[in-house]
Image (cartoon, rainbow, N blue to C red; front, side, top):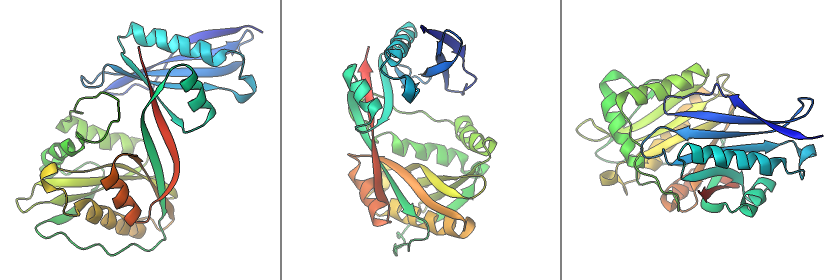
Length: 286
């Protein structure tokens, strides 16, 4: 049976991005695969497009993935995308497929996990700083300081993928937390304040709404002038203690780190995070 590609309207619209979608279907309408292209409206990311492509295992080796990829590449060019990105598990079928079509490795992410019930190592406080925490949207008196602290992620490793600074403002800071709440999940933040009361570091964790399964770390950052003192280790240890108390039915914590980010990988290993699997973020320059 012949395969046809059907462009779709994707409802997954976000303030800074939107998706274009294609469905691959048999002549009778039976779906056999799909592809999504996420377009980013942020100035520093507008040249990048994110690809998701899936073909039903029973329908592989029929050229469906190739046709979907061709459609995505054409759509990306139509929207002035310069580099196409896709995350695939290392050495997986998807990894091999993208390599065959010229996608290079832009960076590699190492996914790690710790059992929440495992003992937490003793971590000393850092003199001259104090920790605070909140759930959900940041309090109004801290929102600007928290937004400013996000610049601590501007120099995070990006491999060979060219990106500029990810610009945040107060509105975006609040909206990011509201999105988590709308999904029915719990966002917890631990932050470090210097002697002036300014936030100089933070770490975020999102826990499923029922408090079960695994929590997922989001951003962790320390402003450059305050690094090398152990703030990330202190904040993350405090977050583990708080999470154990608040969510006793939670199984574990997950995080992902670029393989070249040695300081953060060392911090996570010290806290008991163990490697699970790796993901290649492959790129195709158009």
